[in-house]
Length: 200
Image 1 (tube, rainbow, N blue to C red):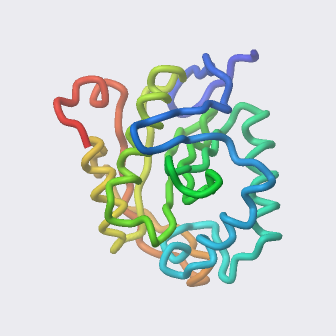
Image 2: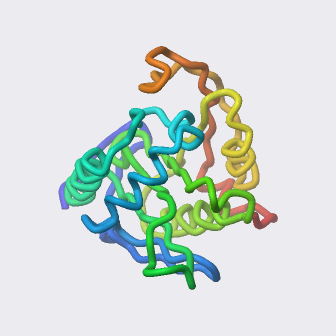
């Protein structure tokens, strides 16, 4: 594969960006066209969508279908991987949320969301932890950025438990608000991830 250069230095993926990652309670797998209905249901919830940069409201099955197609394209280009979060033991292995790594050829960033009925059980922390562990074991990246709109306490708490450090503030567009909002920027280095004495 061609070597790409970016803000974090040389980058070369050592694993296919379509992994299947399993934890004690979850299966993280690439999205499929059949997931569109479930993705639409959870992203059409304003309490989920309002914290996300690129999500319009309302969010339809057609929007979900287009999103999944885009995820397949970026995975094939080697610039991102987007995994559906499936909870073990739930009906028909339906996707309940997403964790994604994007901009892998420039400034690697992780983003995530979970359907509101599944909040408060540590599932998102488990998914993020597993994804970061996979990324640092399989991708040549020195750091992964993240962040959240100011006020998204839950997301920032998940990041803090993983060892992300606040590195500044920025302004990012919100499709729902139709304006720029304050955004807390965070970063987790490979060295900090490897040295962490804690678990989420």
